[in-house]
Length: 154
Image (cartoon, rainbow, N blue to C red; front, side, top):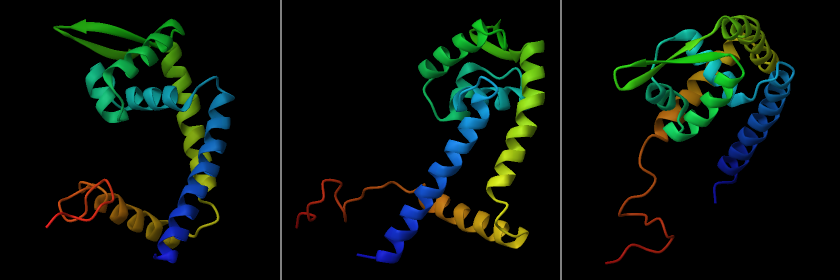
């Protein structure tokens, strides 16, 4: 076993969970979940996208997005407009106001999470995480290493 890899992975998870708890608590002060914030940020950056495009950006199913959008529509934060066979999504005035208040504040919170690092260390961390991210795009299983943990057949 590569103990350094396991220790590093566990540290990465621990740091993620600590940061996630802080960011989630900050959003709760604005009455938002992390998922609602993601929708707000995505629509603030690209209004008029379809529900499917939003689902692709959020890495969730269209069904999950539908439920999330239903709640945000009922809260008066966004509207759906039919365009052909697709629903296009737009922030309401209230949605824009919330976006303009919350997104910069959340970005400040994220910067605060990394405040212990110098600018060079932040760039190094970003490069290392990008490298790791790209390496994980490969399929997890292949014929040389079966997913069930058994040895490959001869």
